[in-house]
Amino acid sequence: MQLDKQNDDEKAAPPNTKSSESNLKTFLQYSALLLALITALLSLIGWTYGTSYLAAWNLPERLFPLTREGAIFGGFCQLLLVIVQKLPLVAKLSLLLPVVMVATLITCYRPFMGWLNDRLVNFFKPLKGQIETNETHDGIMDTLSFVASGVGVSFVCVIGVTLLLLWTDGQAKDKVIKERKAILTDAPGRPPSARLYVKNESKTFDIYSGYMINVSATHAALYSKDKGMVILPVSSITRVEVADQGENEK
Image 1 (cartoon, rainbow, N blue to C red):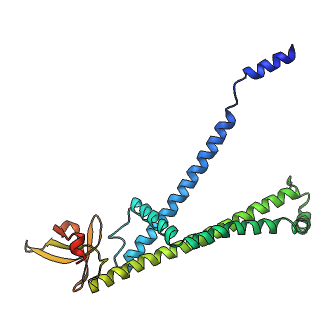
Image 2 (spheres, helix red, strand yellow; image 1 turned 180 degrees about the vertical axis):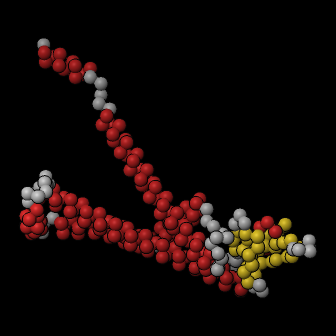
Image 3 (cartoon, rainbow, N blue to C red; image 1 turned 90 degrees about the horizontal axis):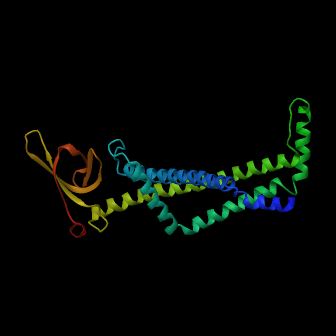
């Protein structure tokens, strides 16, 4: 009777939801951390591309600041270009990560486990009785393995991000070189041509014609073969005429 009653109580007991809630909470925490890291990486890539593009055109960053959304979107586009154009490089970096992790584990465990255990015991002998330690040798090895793996993964990530930023910087400079060459030779691939009507002190208009390089909330950058780069305040521009893409390619 007692056994039957115990079985009935187990069947009637509500399911344990604490474990599922804990797993969901852990999943959400790691998802939020991963999303924050990805957003930061995209923003860094986009910021690198934008500042390199402005520097190549000798445009001051304070007059053409990058928005947060623009930096993230630009970083996303650059990351797609890396995957499409540099797939062998991405594959090599992806293979290098597990190789470093495996090498780290081999180094920290056998065949060097016994040797390293002896060195650790000899190292901590003078501290015996002065500090309390509850970790066994295996615990110490597990900690060292975790730290070494973390260092290896961090090293690979730093190298990968550095190479990605260098490639992004080169992409921005190459784009400026191609645009400048296309402008000078009237070849396809030029920025959109525009004509700006700017107010002057005599209450008339000065006309600036050239290629629109960049526009911010306060300034516009126009490049022409004769005058070079001209930066005009947006508040003084009364009219803008932009040629369509077909006319610009002629």
